[in-house]
Image (cartoon, rainbow, N blue to C red; front, top):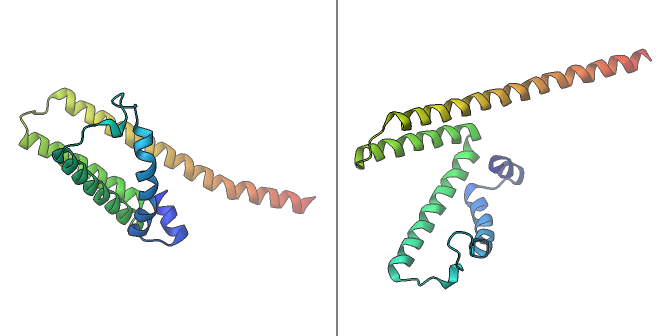
Length: 150
């Protein structure tokens, strides 16, 4: 959808991010109220440390969104997905190296199982879509032939 919007309206990744952020800023706190913690967002006691982490989180989020829009706008959604999988692999690798939580067979098999299911579903729907695209012209040509005969 991001790629389609960028191409349709001929906007850059920064322009798209700039247009989508105000909506999230306005609606976010009201949608979050009482959903996660049972309290309103504005009822929390915000200290300087909490505000610093919120600002850091927002900066990281804007950077991630900007890089997402940039990658999708310049390449394709498939490239973005490949980069997303690379990011996941790097997170898992750094988690294994830096944290004392090593992989076990259950984690490894779960990752492999989810990756295989994702690849199978993606291949299935791509094949289904290509079959529908190739069937469409043949149906139309058959209709043209029949209309010419009558």
